[in-house]
Length: 510
Image (tube, rainbow, N blue to C red; front, side, top):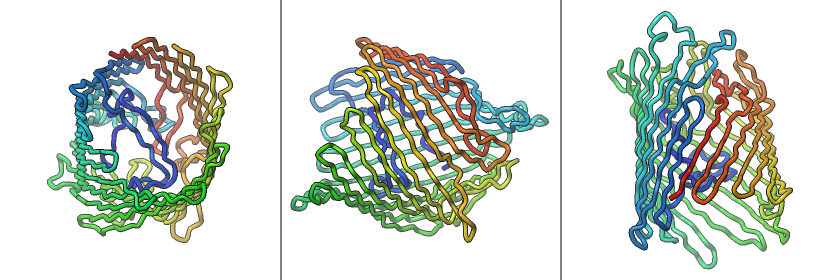
């Protein structure tokens, strides 16, 4: 969309864990959970007064500093706060045309992120505020005869996020408000993007007889606005509301568990067609005496297009498509895993079909004008697996492998290959012996296909490395991203992966 969530606003020191929930998750998580959910869970306030400070430095003028802490005022009252400063210098972002060898550059990035809040009994409040500024240079595209050759584009972001939570073990509720602003300035005008979201959610755990249920309701109000300094009227200013009741239950069938989730979504859309969808999800799980867990899941998903995808951005040649429809489809998974084995492993097979998949279609590869369209049909099948070999008390190696065969078609045309790499192979070698921890990881994306013939569709192979040392309250870490400094095209527009970066960090806990 016009104003996506910026993951840089979440400090890694505040992340407790990251869960990957595979399969269609729309019945539980709502719109956009088509193939799974990446759930970033931040740390809860500590039960004792504590804090930490982290400093990072690296090449490309990289700097990040973070300080956060919790103060316990009574048995059930604690307050917490944190601040992160991020800086980055000149980095390559895009090779405009391999024939010229000229790059676009991100010239300067400065970001500030603050948070504070309190927790008392079942209540918790958190506020997150931040801003960032950046500049970039488009002179590689040949704008050398006018102001483009001397003036850079500039961007300023601001966000506010407020959350009030209640959880007593049976009832869970949340009120939230998000406000994201982005101002993009080129030599001719400033374009202002603003997305606001207000929402409320409530659910309750309940047993009917011996069968457990969770039922709840989600409400969400969205507003999207784009305006420009050289335009009298807003490019668009639209609102919509989502109402979504849902229920989940788990029914025992012998030694297996049959989980059922059902969600109904109603979208009330300003100046547009309302949308309604039933979203069921079914899962059968069975564990044998040896610890193997077998699972089969089937789930429907439903994904609303964003305001930006529907109404476009005429300032930057993204044309509107008021007839853009939501994505709909089913995902199926079957697999087996053993997480408790000495050498944990898993393997699964999946299939997905989709109607009205949303793609961005570039109509002019010189100006990159285009719009978002619905592909009539999309389907994909594949498999994935992982094996962790603990071959020594201090050493382990994790091998991951997945294959994706994806196709799409429009109207009566034949099925054509979707623009995604088919092979995803990863390997992670880890060493851990106090006070040392080291990791070497490699990732390979193979059998790629780009539709823009200007750029090479070479397979991607990236290697990262890190080593850390921790004694008492101090941790020192040295990491390297893209160890061999390889450059690959990420998409049809010539954007490239980050250059090699070394980062040295130090954390002190107090």
